[in-house]
Length: 240
Image (cartoon, rainbow, N blue to C red):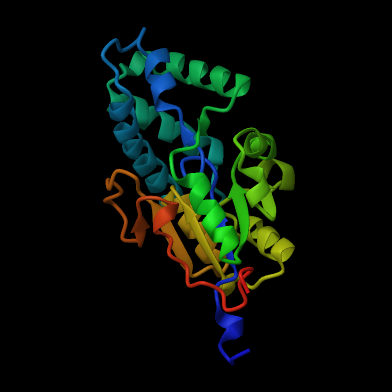
């Protein structure tokens, strides 16, 4: 073992929704057509960036504790309005979204390449973990989508009682993996929740998932998806 071995990347951490399992924009566009007959899935996905921006602006300017319910509420409102939903019908869409999401998580589309990529990371010798703000459903969803087996640890904010951007949720993951913050990389799709939280936990290697290249309001290292993470392979990989 060389003197640098303690600094190498040993674990890769991921947000869950819109990082590993994506929103079912197709199903949502269909559900919202009574309100907006012309709505298309791609337009809905693009409009979602306006929601992220509203969330980021609120979280970044909040003084004192962050009200996550308010943050996600602002996100949804801005997203729907950007998609062309009349303001008077946003509440209807929100109720539909919540009801559908309770029946079966709407973050359920595992896009092509995700599973292969996780397999490659595992085979290269990395420990893998999920750190997600969720309702206690991530373990079950990960099992249903065939993802759970790749992960050494799955941290769900509802289960552990602390949510991103609070650095403690990342510390829980790092402790369970028995690694130091600088030995991990993290990828997630919300700057103020994912990147700010991970950096506060001491994880310097953070990549912002920006599928459509529209995350224009912050300066941060961005990738299209987890396939662009490119971590340096550990010296003592599973492949020997």
